[in-house]
Length: 399
Image 1 (cartoon, one colour):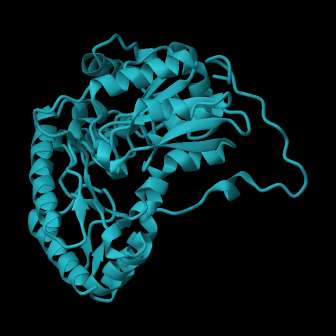
Image 2 (tube, one colour):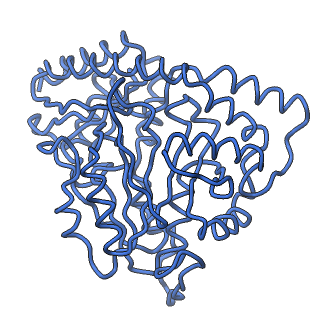
């Protein structure tokens, strides 16, 4: 992919003397820093209700665990093709052809050690210094960070509470410039839990086509929409990269299973990047992927459990003074509006952690439009969620 075509890597300008190193472009904020603080409190014996990071507490599919164990026991721990084991890619392609309701060739499937690489490799192939990428705001922090690392400029398009945290395509259109190269889409959305309707996605796809933009659509939470709720697909074209993961939907964060569905013209470039970065995903992990994808009943039970927790958390927060909640329709989070508290969201998160012993993620970590909010995760059993809300309410009533 280049700025004008879907193959090859764009030219880079050599930085002058004293120019900042690429890693210096990162802002560096994340919920993991708050997790470190929470762990230090727990090491001192403090009971902390951990709502800051979206790491599922539910078990992963037993069939996937058994498959990986068999592969390791059988000595299958060597290299595979950089893009992934061909037989596994065939099975993954069949799964996604059914899920995306369109043909997917095995050659278009790349197995990655973490889904963020799908965005990273797209950016490396598309961006020249100063090019712009449209990212949701609030949004998953690595979107903007990877754009900066690639030498580009992230441009946030707002997800406003009054619109149900669904983007207004007219607002997105107004942000397109001659330097815009990529549009990032994420539904169900992190951190708001919004599910973007079909007409919104169709308008965004039309916008991308008219302006010749590449699209990366992050599908990590697609399996975790409300039971029975339609989750429309982004209308993919020859410039669309599907970025997916089994971390959230299958409770497999530590397995680092990333899946990319890429246009045929981009396969060689992605594979070259894999050869020169990660080589390949661990072979025994790859061979457990088909078993995980076949665990539909396991995922359905997780979806129902998260729906129960979502309702519990939203109802509890709605009764807390100085807190407003837009009900999410999917994902693993609730984004609570705490602007009426009178405190900066980072300061409030610190106060809740150290005084109420509830760990939350400040909304400003997710972009300018996340400021004044706290993200709370659904990844604890209901009694712990209830305890967290009770502690939060007590502390806010004392403000």
